[in-house]
Image (cartoon, rainbow, N blue to C red):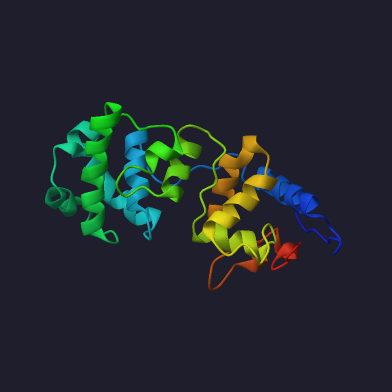
Length: 221
């Protein structure tokens, strides 16, 4: 299918969202996280490591880390100094090493080593904020949660899914969740991230490859 929309300036927000959803469902029908993991615990660790770091870099360090510390029980027995040696090439390795040991210990103390399913519980773990909690809920538990990173924030504004009043990740999240059908929000999270990562780049977007170019920088009320 050739996606080249020539749209009316009076397109409603509902129509815009439907066009964008149709585009991604056709071009990216089965989006997935690019972080490598085998269990909810491994994904949680990988997402914590990915903060202000690329998935590619995280995927380079996690094989050795997961080989030796594949569970919360195993990692809870480690020290931050030991974990640091595995993850020292990611951003903020000292803080992340402390967080990983702390969250592993918290999982053992409160949840028998299992990753909890609610945002409230997840956000009580060391190193886990709203964005990380939303990723886990969306990917592991298929809940209608939208994690807003820099890619989601940028793409949502550029193609007009959110307006200029959405100046924070939380405001963008609320606007997207309000307009995207609940059952596809987990997919939409990946659509926007991957589009921002590979097409709608921050400095030099590949506009010639973008099927949503018509909507770029449109701000609908």
